[in-house]
Amino acid sequence: MCGIAGYVGPREAVEIVFDQITRLEYRGYDSAGVAFKSENGIGILKRAGKLANLRELLEREKPQAHIAIAHSRWATHGGPTDENAHPHFD
Image (cartoon, rainbow, N blue to C red; front, top):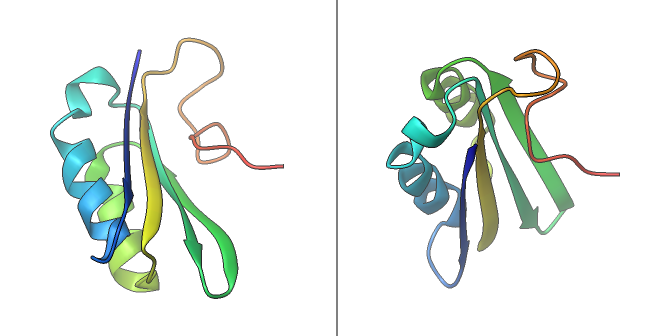
């Protein structure tokens, strides 16, 4: 199971999708991450464990974007690690 949220618009996208994913944490509580499109390209921030871990990273990095997705993960294949956290990007 997982929770997925997205936003495209004039407001701060990362804050919005993080708020959305907190409402879906019950759908996946092993790890979470956000992907966003900023002036510098595509960025991804993700952490294993509770959403508080991701929140700390977001507060430290302070990403700015108007396009973002968030994904919470319930580990069904592969352990709950930062590397296995979603979203993935090639």
